[in-house]
Length: 322
Image 1 (cartoon, rainbow, N blue to C red):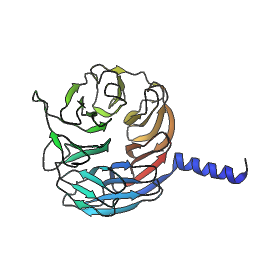
Image 2: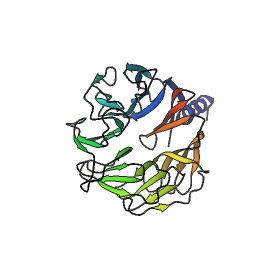
Image 3: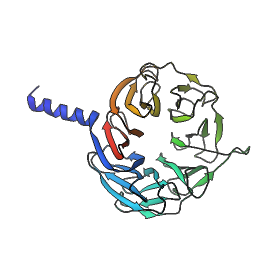
Image 4: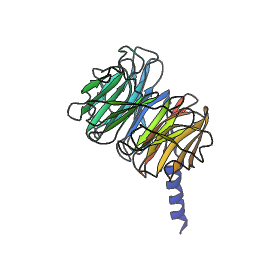
């Protein structure tokens, strides 16, 4: 191998595993990538402002704009794009915006409520409602690509159970899996109706979930435990994990029944990205993030992924290969 080729491979490896870019002073609320180049980040900016940042080179550089708002605690908590042009971002305190030009300009739109998050995939969009703000509305608003960000709002079950969701994953055009503090929400009709599944062994709240089908998934809990289910949460096995080192998993993603990636930490420090090749039983370090509050994990495919969060009051986003 010649010297120039070796230097090039080293540079590519450093970008894939270690590149970290400072975006803005503030807090990160949401992160999404449409492909390996086009991505968007949103969150809370300076006093009484929220921000939207755009990258067209895989996260190496970002263009950031801030939007004034009335509430000092307001934040954008989710962002999603249908294609390279059309996208939406939602947040607390009735914040909701849409763009038709890839994020260069944003227009305020009617908000369904105060949103914790937003997902779009397989021709289906879903807004998770329940953030602080004005509406005091909890539930899911799901709609097809033709009608989104409007759609059908579901805030409770047929038996009168109120919903308090924190997040949702879209598995295909019909199947969604949401989660709350100690329960799962399952929909097999594109968000038209939801089944509530209580998680008896979820301790200290659910932090995140990863499902590869409507039945099979992993549930990360606040006490550091990692649960595995083959029946949609009806029964769960607590995995005997090796390599987590007592860390709490904040974000998790699985490609299949074996390969997964997790963002985990000890208290407020020693953040790491870990990988598993055996369904979550054993974990090995992929990235050492150190201090901060890393709260976003965006996995596009087996070659492209990003983590994001705050370090000493500034938002950082880092690329890596899962």
